[in-house]
Length: 419
Image (cartoon, rainbow, N blue to C red):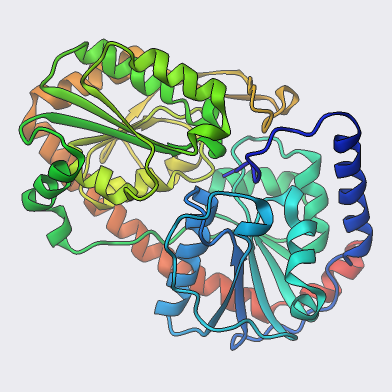
């Protein structure tokens, strides 16, 4: 979930140097993690609470899971401080955060930890157990994330893939704590719900609808929407009975990616691009017969799990964080080969190694099978729903167990000894 936290272009020349100086100054001003006095009656969750990105959604899900378990949760929204899109109408802010002893769960990427702590303020940070809830999408962790861990007592990662990467690179306890995705009632998975969603999105009721959603700030090359477009076009061409709904937020954040999308969509009236943040992801999923994600890597794959939880069969790359909750029994997993990271957006450096290049031909074949074989499509949807429900129920127990374990362990003395 390596969201680029600003949509502004990288400042040139002296502005870039000034930004580096500011970052270094913050590192010197913010103390590294010290003695903590964790208390479960003062839990604070901080992050991009109003951001439509996966990073924002991870914080909202964390708040919801803890509140449903009966915990008092203070919240801090950092969206405006990181200049991200803050259009999500999130009002479940819980209680005001309290200073002093307690637990702070920080949903901010490693390189931005010092900036976030500066905005939160030392009074709220002091004496708290500091947990970084991080997702990383490659097997090698860059220096900025490793440095950010100095200000935290432990790391929570939503998948074993991310946790393994952090464990190899960081001298802090790392726990696998999956996101607790929302489980909707069965009423939200009916034909009526699908019909209503298609009406709102102006889609034919009888069409075979494929969906994929991502945010441009979550990285264009990693999310790999061009592969989803290519697989759909290979499978159906201009067939009006098949439709692809591509939900992409923050198109302006990466003009080169937006232009690539428009080039691929041109001439295909059966491909619909949605960029309106007021149209929620769950509406796109409700309208779909199938969800597809031909990602190059995922730290978790939240929209994939949400689609499964809505009873939709999913076609996804067989690599990275999503493998924790998917199998060939309940999903269609696409083989891939490893290629060197190539990211013009600059979030992922080539030196960090490889990510997946999924088979477009295999994905197109899977789409055609789901299109023609309604019985198979329905069976995979039922299996996906069962797998998602089982995973979410386990995840609810996992986050509570992780919280209690974090509160009971002597992190402060362990970190002092590790220095």
